[in-house]
Image 1: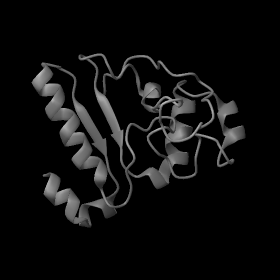
Image 2: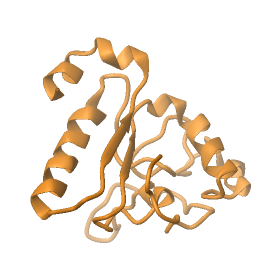
Image 3: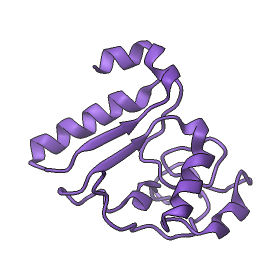
Image 4: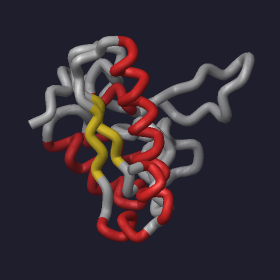
Length: 139
């Protein structure tokens, strides 16, 4: 079982305001998975972003996302996207079928170890990602 802690995200996510810059702060969907700044909590990296709808449904079932968020599903400007990204609910990184998430998770885990954090970093991957070269480069 993962030790994620309670969700720190708004149960109905805000719309995507654009790429981060001087007037647009960066946002993350990882807050639905708990306080990612807490060194004792685990981090969940969800790699198959094309399964975003499954992750959103899970977040609703466990009380980390309001079902009303589905009214914005796959709408222009919504963070509740068809294919999840780092700003989509439950997503910590931009990933996908090329298996970038494992490399990113390795970097996150290494940084956490250097900082003395005790929480684990867990990656959920799909079977097809194990055929990608980047998976084996990360290992």
